[in-house]
Image (tube, rainbow, N blue to C red; front, side, top):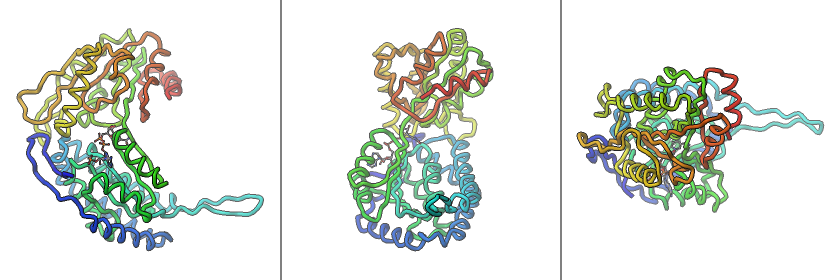
Length: 409
Ligand code: NAP
């Protein structure tokens, strides 16, 4: 299996990494399992807190260098990459401040006697993470588990190996013992074998439904705990009293942040007929004013997509939407003047519920806009999705907006 950094702006292969051997996996499991035994009584929590504090400091010190690795791996804007590194540092602060509280035993008082629940390590965990936030996706699973005393084996996306290794190297530099977080360049069969190993207690995956089903199946076969954080097709309901200027200020972040490749970004905009034309005009202005270009240049506002494969998938999805009656009101033209994996931001309307794209996530800079007449219709549209994750309700009257939000599944 190829682990490669292919810079999505230049299309150049910058790094390639050999696949890990089964011997390396065995060594990793042995070291990780030994650490679990060392940590399971919670005794080294103070030491682990110091290590995470150091990790936060290292992330802040090396923000630009780490951001650059992220940008080269998967193309995001350098400002967004640096913001991601800073966010990871803030997780270090958050969990160090609360570790004692989170890990304190919970007492239970009953008529038949007193008891307590111990919050302690469970053992070695496997983490399978995606490319869209190469540091954040690792940080948010690694930091709390490390503090709890769970050693972790990481299988990161094959297209961002350099940042995954850099994160693991920073953890080591912060003083974490061997086995705390081991990044392995492994194939899907090796992931299955690790999940099946009796020293491994569970697996978490962030990614697509396809990847989630495969890894959850391995976990189920072996009766291991699993958590799956999968795709989203989040609705953004605009209420009839919405302030269009305030809306205009958040649309770029809601749909175009990280080139639209965010599980919880708003993908379906559900707009009342009184604001529909104005909304489309405003969205077109925003989409047509982006500046595509070198993601390392701070003046660029829309980055390339993370890979050729992702861009081609999105092109096919837009074509499918159009074949089934969707209208392109902006975009969907080739970006000929740049070599990277750029996708022109695109606005689609007239997607009927029988259009196959209606219930598919489009993971890139494509906005779908739906028109509604009364709010019940908007709620029904938002709920008509097989995806979960988040939704947004946007209006002036906050208590009305909350009533609508409460009806979103
Ligand atoms: P993906 O193909 O499922 O990849 C995610 C990770 O799973 C990668 O490390 C991938 O490795 C691995 N993987 C895939 N199939 C596997 C298998 N059969 N066995 C073992 N590992 C496997 O996901 P993606 O399409 O690149 O990522 C985008 C998706 O992630 C979107 O749907 C997005 O919404 C979702 N996402 C969800 C969240 C959330 O928190 N809910 C956050 C971010 C993204 P390889 O790279 O080697 O294939």
